[in-house]
Length: 356
Image (cartoon, rainbow, N blue to C red):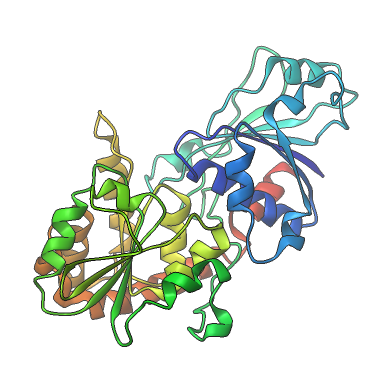
């Protein structure tokens, strides 16, 4: 089938990252034909500039305007149109669908949530005045949800020089042997400086890998390495592709992530993590976080539950770091459970089955 995915980048990289991961899954794993129309192609191209360009070449990357420009439209009518995260389809693109020989299905791809209520709304019709069939599709952790984007399934990559992505070699060459590694990708509202200062009081060495832009959030002097104490080394990595970021998550002992795509990838890496969920004025993010933790910690020991909840709410690491080994074991068990529950292929496969 032909799929058109519409993506407007709202929060830096996350929305584009999910659209790209979905497109690569549909093409590489399921043989579908996919176009992405994006309002920020440079960012999308950076995220998709991963380790295997043959995968990227299967997806047609188009600027947003190409969906309705006179010299590009109408192109062959799609079978499925995806409005990623409720973005509004261009009026001229919709007009082309009205006169098309066959009418596509429109999917409103929603944000991921572990909240139980999404099962009641997932897959439900959303009648439109224009008459084109439209449906809600909710990614989620439950069996009766849209599932998770699990492609590619991460491997625990080796740390030999031959396996280090070229863009990361300058940073990785500075890592200290036998030192715990923490990756950091969070919003500016996180109390990161205080968190790192406390980490330095624990008496153990940590190499902290800061993703692109994090050093500016700390308001420290720029540079490749900054020591807060003799135990902490800060290292900055450049803007990297999704594949390279997935590799970073697999190589660290603990990950701080934000948004949706890195949230799922941290779980699939099988490592303990903090999900810095996007803060909302109405505190809806607190409900969303609590719903996830109820699932994530369902079979965890009481000590791991306490440590994880404290960490997720930015309690200083000295309060919970002693539970990191048990939390690591729990993270691997959770990863195994996730992959079993997504054994049908996850979000991409469930989308195809739903459309069929």
